[in-house]
Length: 343
Ligand SMILES: Nc1nc2c(ncn2[C@@H]2O[C@H](COP(=O)(O)OP(=O)(O)OP(=O)(O)O)[C@@H](O)[C@H]2O)c(=O)[nH]1
Ligand SMILES: [Mg+2]
Image 1 (cartoon, protein in one colour):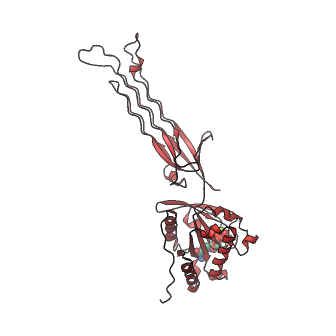
Image 2 (tube, protein in one colour):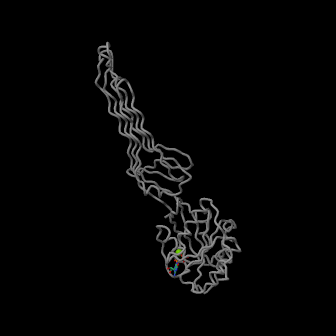
Image 3 (cartoon, rainbow, N blue to C red):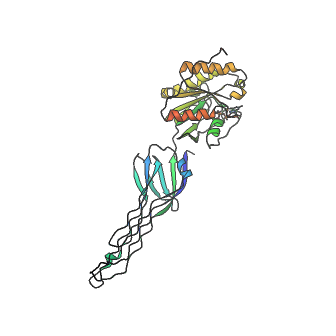
């Protein structure tokens, strides 16, 4: 479930052909063989990159080829080598041969390079085939083809952003609107039993969001689904805290916020130290705007950026996505200022 997977094709460059040629010079009768060698084809090289955290870029670009070597020429000129092609893969990517299932490489460190498909050797020109008894050779070799492979890439995803909140707050609905994840959504608490991950792209950033089960008061004592699943968001860089502001909850939004914060803290104080967005969810069905304003004032007090969203109408989703990307790119986001009640 926590795995991103793509199938791609790579093709290294073919080697250039060796050349068949003889020296032709004025006053030099019967010049010897002078066919140069073909150049080597370029490799396809995977490079582990810290700037990529998903395999999404391969979905748009599933074929990667390196340049072929040039053919040899007369006057013993060798063909130029084909340029290799560097292809970035996220650290943590495991590469399998899709035909045999063999593990080819496991990228564990940023900057690690591995030639996944090797370029073909250039063919030898006829200059190499001369012997004392065979002085006008016409033999010359074709270049060898570059390796071609079908690969399966696998990446274990780590979430960048965690969605937290009460059961039924709209966490799964939100992830289904901003990513391709299709978790179960239902109008009762504890619909989500296992974390769901979704890959989100916004602006130039691609990141992974985790939708986890809801928290209730006493979760750290085992109430509801407990708190063990919070370990899935321990390594995230941003928490998005959803509070249902509709009247249907029968609870006060500010109380909901504080209860969830206490549960997070009791699991690990580091969780509440993380950057956090406070999100008023289901604003399309919040009749009493005072409920939204009280949450907004709380965001101002806690210096948290504040958003109002509806995953049903789509209100506020673009801005939320964009600002998540900004925080992950380490840009500053403005915290809420107190709601202006004068108008
Ligand atoms: N009107 C309205 N309903 C929403 C909105 N977002 C979610 N819902 C509804 O709220 C209910 C709960 O949504 P979920 O996304 O399953 O909530 P959750 O936070 O994932 O809940 P758990 O998995 O139980 O923790 C569903 O019936 C959704 O259709 C919204 O923006 N507006
Ligand atoms: Mg859910």
